[in-house]
Amino acid sequence: MKVILLKDIRKLGKKDEIKEVSDGYARNYLIKNGYAVAYTKGSKKVLDKQMEVRKEEEAELKKQAEAIKEQLENTPIEFLLNAGANGQVFGSVSTKNIVAALQKKGIQIDKHKILLDAPISSLGTTRVKVDLYRNQVIGEIVVKVRQKG
Image 1 (cartoon, helix red, strand yellow):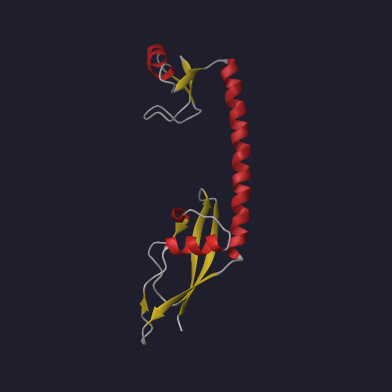
Image 2 (cartoon, helix red, strand yellow):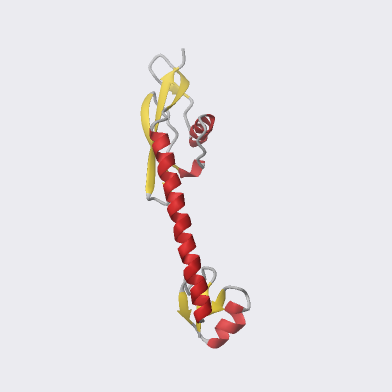
């Protein structure tokens, strides 16, 4: 029996895939639990329409990510930290600090999207990459760290 998967099923397939499975498995497990629907001309049309709508939504999200990328590259952020006589910085700038500084400038970004291996703990300018859309749109933030006083 052919079915259209409504959810990702381990060892069977991903959402929206069409799979051939045994009748019993399809009726007694997949369809009964809402993991799949039987493959028919009608269900195929519904799937095609959903895929089209999803593509349009994805294109819109990517467009928004491009706009945020442009905004980030034109918005450097600056932090003032205490530093010792030899230039050693006391404290560091983490992704949480970067997100807070961006929010003050009206840019909303999830801190998990910022690609920073370790907090910035040196004076100077650092370019920090941000994954804005599924590794397809990568933006950069210019983070300047200066000495207080």
